[in-house]
Length: 115
Length: 113
Image 1 (cartoon, each protein chain N blue to C red):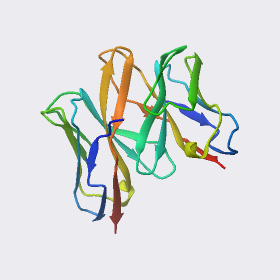
Image 2 (image 1 turned 30 degrees about the vertical axis):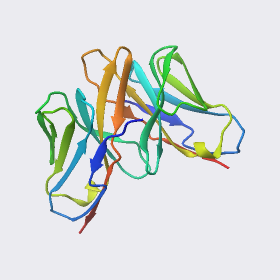
Image 3 (image 1 turned 90 degrees about the vertical axis):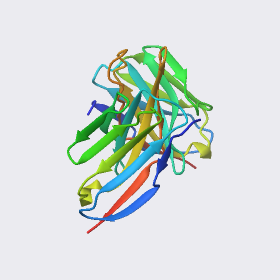
Image 4 (image 1 turned 45 degrees about the vertical axis):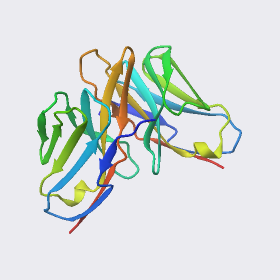
């Protein structure tokens, strides 16, 4: 357990509104990730961060932005929510030590519904 | 994006039976990981494999890193009701600062008494 919390855990929002999801970790892990999980698609990477202010896109990054101003927090923003972004969002962290363990540890998830 | 092929997609077994599932890829991975996810929760790491041919156990779970580095297997012995969940494999790739996992599509396990 890497001490990962996500907030909010559930959210319902309307199409066109901005939404920000927060991931907080207490393990001082270098890497943080945002995934979405949908039936039939498994876990897909949205964005990830390899350090403070260092981020990169994953495979499904359109319509999402991220920010990491400090090691422990990684924010995911849906700039203008659409119904296709209804999903369960998971945050994960990893130590990122070169040549070291590559395990990712997951948070409890945020269920987002866009109406 | 690439996803790993995981089979079977679902399994219905009786308590006490052994379970086998596997994951295959067209790409080579340097690390294979197995996760379990229960309803309403995030995936939980079960086993990590770092060397081709490696066989690793965690209680009743045993996983192997295929010698081609393109596949991995997970076995669960003497299943119990709390084994119910979705099991995901994941392969790790690192290129520079890009350290990413590619996930399988999952095997849903149901255990009947």
